[in-house]
Image 1 (cartoon, each protein chain N blue to C red):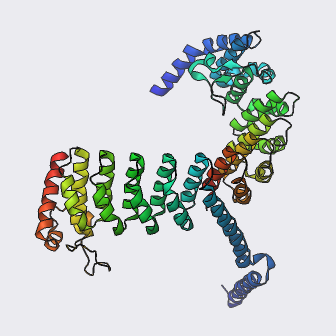
Image 2 (image 1 turned 45 degrees about the vertical axis):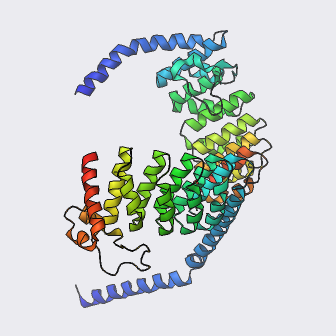
Image 3 (image 1 turned 90 degrees about the horizontal axis):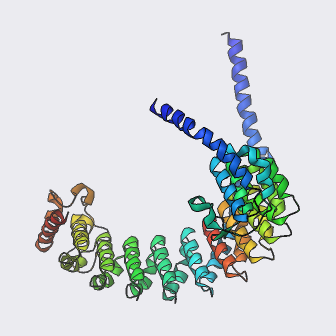
Length: 259
Length: 225
């Protein structure tokens, strides 16, 4: 290729780049930033108004409307609605309370914990059961004491969800209650308790003292997955006190039996 | 190969019977007994596109709203929204036309503009069930029909077709005088999931009718944040 051709080609390329850049900066139709901001702003406004409307609908005279509003707020993932949803945990309609308690779990906000702790004492089995699951989903350690009490619930379904939630939260304060649950009359609860103990023993919460450490553990702990059910988890066992180790073994044994 | 043999066998076994059934069922459409007319339409629906020859008679039957026990069609009853226990020859003719498919589209659009409101309602439903989005502008006009059941079925049909171009018309229809229509419109807006409906649906949370408020709350959740 002749030097002249190379020169002409380079000139064309660079001018094309220049024209393209100039178009982006000068063309009025390409003010994408302000346009999108305007649209997003309007959308947020509409959504905020919708959330306000749905929060108001939590007090509708019709229970069906209240339930649907609670469900919609969970779908909209509205953290702003958490206090209003938490207040609705005292609704007169048991089905509404089930929806509320489930929605609070889906939103995963710790502000819902006091309301969910109350819901563990609800007269409806469904509400108590879902309250336990939601507390497990939120994973806040402030729920542990209330869940330990609820581990003695008269309904086996509730006990099962409580035991699972205690495993999910992974606080060692629950070990006594979970050890008791290893003797539950219901086989699936015994199995869940064994799993929960293994989860706690697996490194989620190695604190032997009753109050959890405010900071995350400074030493990297082996993940429960790497350890499996604690079998061969030398590191985890080393980090546990004797009491916990015995229980983990007990749990593994029972788990093997019930499985 | 096995599938081909089975398909051929099936065609050989059922083809003559199908033709005979089609003739008998088409004749039943002219019966004086509404239950027999309904049953005929049900049988034709089971034949699907095999009922093509009955197309004009089925179209004519769309106006027939005589109430019939849904059990006359046995297990094959096509359940309509809000009419679980009773059906009519017109409703069953509509579902037979849906089963015929695209050849039924033009006749249905004519009935949608016709003089009898029962026919218009059944045609609106059928157009919604046919999965042809070309019907959306026509159905959008039917949201202003004089009869509430036609408006309601049109709203359902637009929602079933996800006709987002009809969102402005649906938003307008949220102010319908009939609560049943407003409820169906709120459903359609949620099913379409278009954000332009959020403001109007938020207003519907204060509707005088609980069914509308409930459906509006559902729709807002379905549209999402």
